[in-house]
Image (cartoon, rainbow, N blue to C red; front, side, top):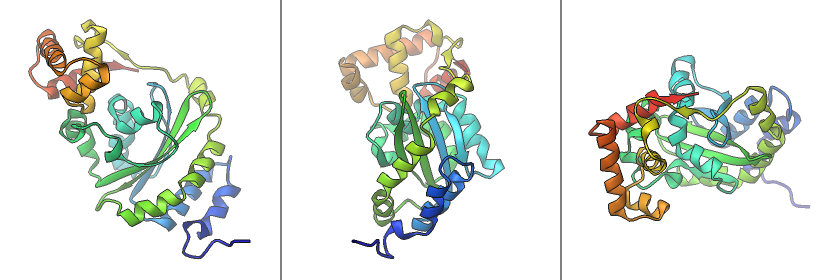
Length: 257
């Protein structure tokens, strides 16, 4: 029989506590402690997703003065543009991902990143993705304030990803019922002129704000880059705006849960 070596992330004694606490309130703190024993990080947050419904904040370790940006503001609308949210509901295969590998080609020049994400003041975010019954998904994010996760850090966490995602599936198999019980639904876009946009124009707006270039948007929608730019000019004219920042502000003001 092959034993787990003391150098293996699976050797961490905290793993036993995680398994013992499946289905109990102490599960999330125990899971966090085990992952911290493998690779240190600043914060963790676990969100449950169901399509474009407002995500459920399952657990987080943010201090109160930071929680507004990471959770409250996020749930008010920015989550719709988040690469992690978009990748969860797409969905991507279960496993561990860096944000930058899931982000659109112009993400770091996009207004979601510049106006919202930079306010989090973190160096990097990575996340474990797991799929639940009834098209629900859970993302367990690990965040660092000072420096990005090294290749070694990522490799150590990726090695336990199958265990982490299996634990997540066991713990949150009833997530769909939580969305029903909390009456969490899809937000509506009302006012701010956004409700007057055509379906195609609304699609273009979503790609712009997520950080897709005109070229990437065209590829995703199977239209030419020139057509994307024409739509963008028409959208700006219809809304009476001249910048992506104004478009992002209209979007946030128009989202009603």
